[in-house]
Amino acid sequence: MNDSAFPALHPVVESLGEAARAASRVLAAADTGAKNRALAEAADALASREKAILAANAEDVKEARQARDVGRGADDAFIDRLTLTARTVEDMAAGLTEIAKLPDPVGEVTGLRYRPSGIRVGQMRVPLGVVGIIYESRPDVTADAGGLCLKSGNAVILRGGSEALRSNLAIAACLQAGLKAAGLPEACVQLVGSADRAIVGALLGAERWVDVIVPRGGKGLVERISREARVPVIKHLDGVCHVYLDDGCDADKALAIVENAKTQRYGTCNTMETLLVSREASPRTLPAIGRMFAAKGVEMRADAEARAVLGAAGVAGVLEATPDDWLAEYLAPIIAIRTVAGLDEAMTHIARYGSAHTDAIVTEHHGRAQRFLREVDSASVMVNASTRFADGFEYGLGAEIGISTNKLHARGPVGLEGLTSRKWVVLGDGHVRS
Image (cartoon, rainbow, N blue to C red; front, side, top):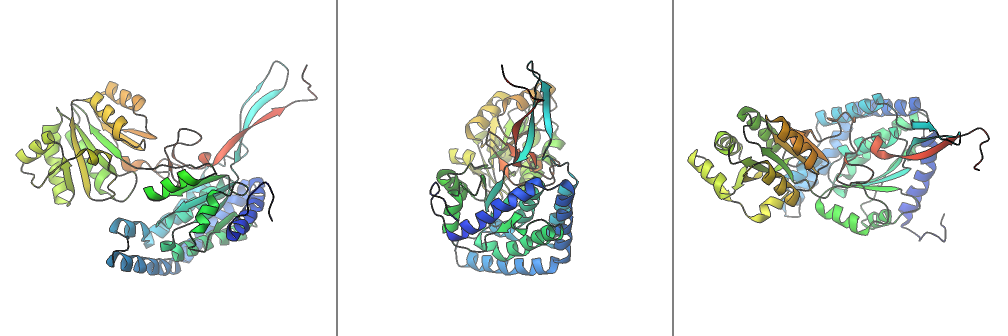
């Protein structure tokens, strides 16, 4: 099926898109109970098929390791994101269960009020329609994205990376089993089963079939999608996240937050990449932090002041930071450390070098905490908490379809509400405009 107003697309995208558009209309009209049944059945399918999912993932990981060993691009962070465990599968099932428990945003009417003419005007929350998700190496995205789109009434076309194709197919089959059991079209969740790169380009131009694209992957992927897409994009480009240790901060809190923000997991977009330390806090906090990083094998790249403090504390091997380090998203056990005069200089640094993703302050001063919250222009801003909390599950969204640093429509972790829009509704009783 084609239309002269729209260019012909890759046949796979035409087929998936037409099916998704038809399914989206059914799903948009589905009641909450049907959507929740589909999610519950999908969660059960994940649990019952755990061995098959892990076996499929083991094949994907084996190929990725072979590619790494011959220098074909897969690194340890990439393989970490690709690897599933029994716990990961349990978490995916739990995420679907949590999504089912969340209030259904679709059909919610807010702001209904009378106008002088006698009509009532309000806004109703509605699905976006068809969501295209293009992602790399993280098969758990298949479950999270599929579940969120289902609950928010959106059909979804998933295009995962070829490196995770077996894993993604096994997980998507669980979602489709849930849809079938609930009497909903299996085409509400479709996975591109081909590694053909031309499909990505076709999805980016599929204005007839796709209402929004969400990229999940490396900077190169997101840059390409942002540059080429004719469909609106919800995205973030970098995760250059900061923790700032303020004057008078609690040293124990600082150590715990910095350790978690950097070392709990290295390959995620909400991992701290730059530590900013006020000149007053540096001698009280950096020695213990430096020893912790050294014990965990984290490479430190610091400015002259921080290197002097660390050296005096017996922390060896600290490298000299360069300006490029302030812009780096390492996704690896490497940390940039910079000394600043205080809050104003810290916020200036974040404004210049940050990626508007997630930034945190460790402070005991209420006024400075409030200034940091108001003035740091990032999607998530935190006081006395690890940047690793910037996550849909931790924010009570059940899961997330991605992180957005856009300023329009959705910002931060994108959950159910971020996958909906609002339309105006008008209620009258034979009213006409004079």
